[in-house]
Amino acid sequence: MERDVSANSRLTIAAHALTWIGLYQRRGYEVATSEQIATSVNTNPVVIRRLLAELRKAGLADSRRGAGAGWMLTRDLAAITLLDVYRAIEPGPLFALHPATPDPECVVGHGIGPVMAAVYDEVEAALRGELAKTTLEDVLRDVLKAA
Image (cartoon, rainbow, N blue to C red):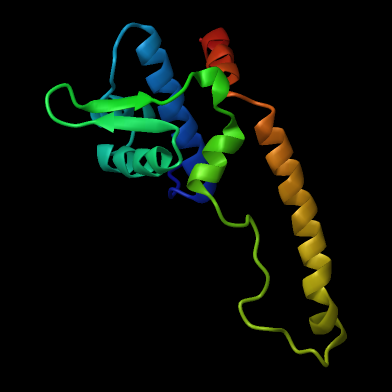
């Protein structure tokens, strides 16, 4: 089943790319090219470069230009959580309220915003809490176990 790249798959692709770079560095290589990473992810290297640029801004990855160009982690996999990755690529809220204010004279229109905002706050707090519990070291460990 072919799917478009969405916010949820961006987190997966970013975690994949960083975990792959971490494993590659452990195997003795200093930097990884976006082409190499893209092969593992099965996507275009441009997608990887754009995502890694966001991760670089967040301090999770860095790049080197010129001879021996490529991407590297700025810290160990054990020091990067899925929440760090999520915040780097999805800094905004998970859910949003109406783009236009609902009719305040309608009982549902008047009350829906605060009710949904409270639910969304709880959902986002739970999501962030779960993502904070898992490091990319955990991801790599489980990937290697499954291999």
